[in-house]
Each structure stands twice: as C-alpha cells, then as structure tokens.
Length: 308
Ligand SMILES: NCc1[nH]cc(CCC(=O)O)c1CC(=O)O
Image (tube, rainbow, N blue to C red; front, side, top):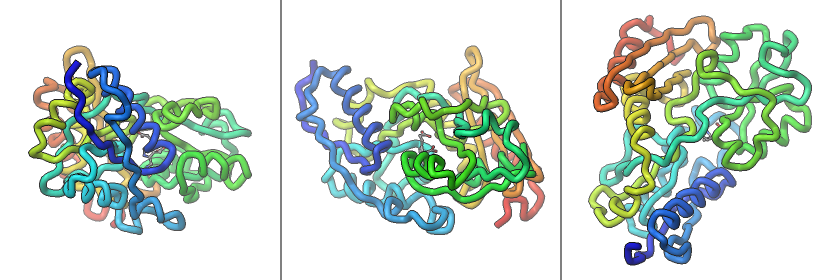
C-alpha cells in the first residue's frame, strides 16, 4: 500500500456522472488500499447540465460538459476529472491531458420500448426519440418510414418520457444503463455490425493536469491499455473529421486477435447516404489507423455531405 495522499475527484452531478466517479473511486481504493475519505468527490455543475430545451449541437457542443471541470483542474480545486469519453471534445485546454481510460463497458446501444420488440418491429410512423444525430441518422437509414424526434434529458428523464408515452421507443447506451443498474429497461441490444456506437461510447476518461506526475502515477494502475488503444484510434478518427455535434459520425475500435480494428461511419443527417471506412493493424499504430480511416471518409465525402 502506497501512503495515502488526498486526491479530489471532480465530477458532474448527474446520476450517471456520479456512478462513474464512484467507480473511479472504488478502483483507486481497490488498487492502492486507500480509504474513500482520501478520495473525496467534488460535484461541479456545468453549463451543459442547465440546457434541457434544445439539442446540445445548437447550444455549443461538447465542451459545455467539461469547461467548469477543466477550470477546477487548472485552479487545483480538483486533482482528476472523470468524464464519459463520448462527451469529451477532441482537443482539451492547454495544461490538461487524458491520463487514460478505465476498462470499457458494453459499447452497444440499447433499443427500449414498452410496446415493440425491436427497431424492425416498429410500425411505419412510430415515434422514436433521441437527441443524438448519430442515432437519428442511423435509425433513419434503417427505417426511413419512422418519425424520429428530439428526446433530451439525462438517462432517467428519457426513460420517464418513454414511460409517459411521449415516444414509442428510444435508444440509450448500454454502458450508462449498466452503470445505473437500469438494464431491466432494455428491450434488445443493437449489435455494432448493424448500429455503430459513438466514438468513446462506454469508456470513462480520467483527465489530469499535464504536469502532475503524482496524480498520473496514482491513476496509472486503474487504467486499461486495450481501451487506451481503441480510444486513441477513435479519437484520431474523430479529430480528422473534426466531429462537431452537428455531424452524424460513428466510430468503434476493438481488438481482433492481436490487431486493432477501427470502423468509422459518416452519414447524411436524413440517413439517405452512409460511408464506411475500416482499418486494421498494430495497436501501437492506433492513431495512424484512426487518422487513415478519417482521411478516407473525408476524401470520399461529397461537399456538403455532413449537412452543415
Ligand atoms: N450524451 C450523454 C451520455 N454520455 C454518456 C452516456 C452513456 C455512457 C457511455 O456512452 O459511455 C450518455 C447517455 C447515452 O448516450 O445513453
């Protein structure tokens, strides 16, 4: 057991964010034998938490969930920040780095409905709610006859709206549902071959001050190398496409034997067209594989493809 420093863990206050912060805390306790009193949580409200009425893509994008945590890190009021990798912008502020990622949860999306068994089972015109342009575009691609609407709010809010019949079905990340103990709600899971997750889905990122070697050493034992390679490829892919929240982009990397494989997709928002790129190679070349997949799509994409 290493002597116990006090490390303040910064997190947002949503139930999912808190579950992820507790998982980080538990893993640090398990690997160092520290007590939770030395790993206090600091709950920080972000601009993104206050926006409920419009798509985040219109309100300013992903940085909305990280800005206040970044400031707290740089000011030293927290020592590490726990983020859903999916919600992290591709570039972080000067002085902040991702130390790495916890072992990845289920990367798939879940289909949830009280009346229908699957996307294929929905009748024409059925209402499917989602706030994600990626999910909306992939739903429209598979089922152009459905009525895809905006459904916002945290995981529990969305489930409550489904319960009230505001929509016939919704899609949510399996990872979030598992972390919240809500998998009872899942009607069926969508395999990645048919429905590609978002870059970073299911992964928890640990952000630290770039120069803080003490915190870097403290978190090292809880980081997962395979997740790190996958995320390096996915985030390099997204960086090339400079994925704003307005663009339907999906990307997923995983180990296939000894090799890392990345699959990336860009779609028209209405789902009428979809381009895919796949690269496979050494996990050491994760960034190159991701960049190549992104560059291929960029090259093949007609002007205006992403609808902006
Ligand atoms: N954008 C919200 C968000 N950010 C991370 C998750 C779930 C956990 C994950 O994907 O890692 C969710 C909810 C959802 O997409 O269902």
